[in-house]
Length: 350
Image (cartoon, rainbow, N blue to C red; front, side, top):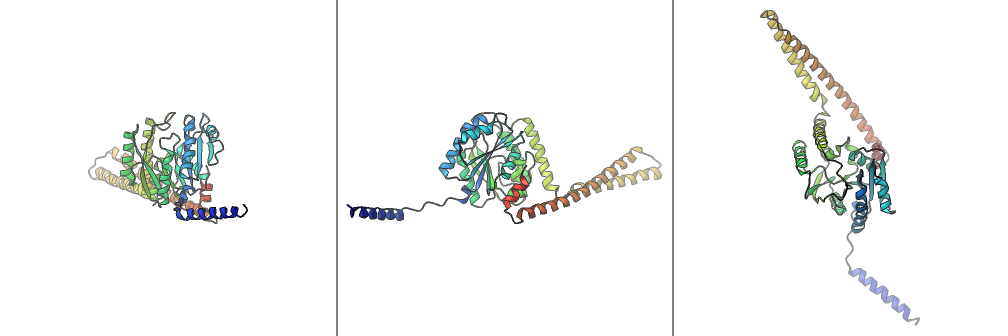
């Protein structure tokens, strides 16, 4: 009996070795699958939490995702954050951050970015109109070397007419190589060092980043009906606000680095026109002996507005110079003996 046992063990070892050598090696897991944070802004999304958390956990397990989930409770009155933590049941991938008041989706994104040192961020809505199974597709594109990956909504969309006009205007004005700017997206976290987002400017994140030279691509993602609750970002006021923001972003991208072009040049033209009008008024008064008082008022108006515009251009140039110096200091602080992610976290903490 004692001689049989070692023989059996040796046979088992040989069999195991043969089987291991015969089977194909498993494909390597992309680095992006672990080095990412899923950012989930949530405002009064308690009815969706029982669907959201289990589906995220299932997707992480199915696709071997090892990143983290940061749910930002954006001032909810229905304890969205508390319900998410309870639903997670100790799932160590989930963190819940809270805003005391509703601050908006852009601020939620920045809060999450300041709280993580992951290389990639994936912006994901809590209403599950996009499924967690889409996450690996975005990470695969980032792994291919793209800086930003956006989703192009496919399926029934209640606001398709408004969204189509907005996206068409954005493509025509900003020349971005994607067709849907306000959808699920994934990107390198350090882009937030180069792009400063104001309130509600998450919609223009792709535009601002593309102008900074970051590469952008898009993939089709299916749009599903909202599971529960009410849409938080709809209404005519959102359309008006979006158009005004569109104009503000255009002005900033076109003239923020050249304020003298925006203000100084018109100021010079108005001043020159005022001087010319003054010469005409003098000619009429002394050569033709015809006084015309409204011309005098027009001269005063043109020259005054022209000088004010020119002075505004000079002040703008001074502000841009200070702004550039601050940018240099921010970059030096971010790279001065610390990882870039650490600099971003300190610079972006709300």
